[in-house]
Image 1 (cartoon, protein in one colour):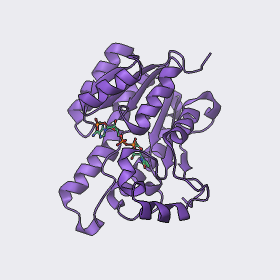
Image 2 (cartoon, helix red, strand yellow; image 1 turned 60 degrees about the horizontal axis):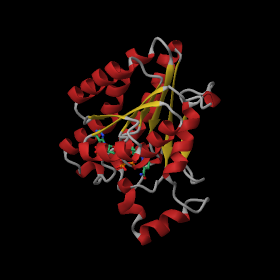
Image 3 (cartoon, helix red, strand yellow; image 1 turned 135 degrees about the vertical axis):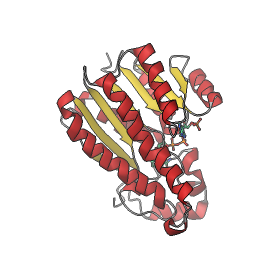
Image 4 (cartoon, protein in one colour; image 1 turned 120 degrees about the vertical axis):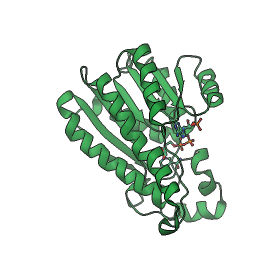
Length: 246
Ligand SMILES: NC(=O)c1ccc[n+]([C@@H]2O[C@H](COP(=O)([O-])OP(=O)(O)OC[C@H]3O[C@@H](n4cnc5c(N)ncnc54)[C@H](OP(=O)(O)O)[C@@H]3O)[C@@H](O)[C@H]2O)c1
């Protein structure tokens, strides 16, 4: 029997890409899964793809009131949470940092770093009695400066530190907090990079394993961090970069 059977799992941004792959992983193992995203059409398609076995909640995580509403629904339906995957992320492309509008900086910070903080803050009361696991989906852009991804990378670096801080603060509640930091992954999000033959060729020069990551690679890493196999790991940022320096 799967160790995830009947576990209550929330995956933010679970309607497409990596999040949908994660939702499929946990649904296949008979977990009780909730996903959120901004667009109902994406959520409906995901629900259909997952055979209806998922709670879908429309929520824009850049908006605190949506995060609050998301957790009202999760609490009503699940009562508590054992696994939270902060997968949602947006705005990978950023202009040169010193030329960025303040509004863009705020939007990227709010939708990535603040959103992760808000979700963790709301998840804590649902986890503190029974313990649990939080896995944040960060990026190698948060570990090293990447061209064209400056402010996004700064937000992801903030998520890495949030991971370490929460790992310390929540250990006493039996809550482990870790992150995965993938390099380029084959989803729509980064298609403008890997979908361009010249950029892809350049990228592959720096990846010893000779390919960019697949959704499945990230799913395997997240599932390890969510499982009992990583019971003594907390506060770690697992770089998933195919061997490129991180
Ligand atoms: N793909 C890569 O190369 C790569 C590499 C490293 C790290 N990552 C990280 O991996 C995570 C997932 O990326 P992905 O490639 O799977 O992205 P994706 O294919 O663009 O999917 C993003 C998911 O998040 C939802 N979403 C986007 N903005 C949201 C918001 N403000 N509030 C709520 N939901 C929102 C989307 O649904 P709606 O559009 O309906 O809202 C969708 O379900 C992100 O944190 C990203 O930074 C990706």
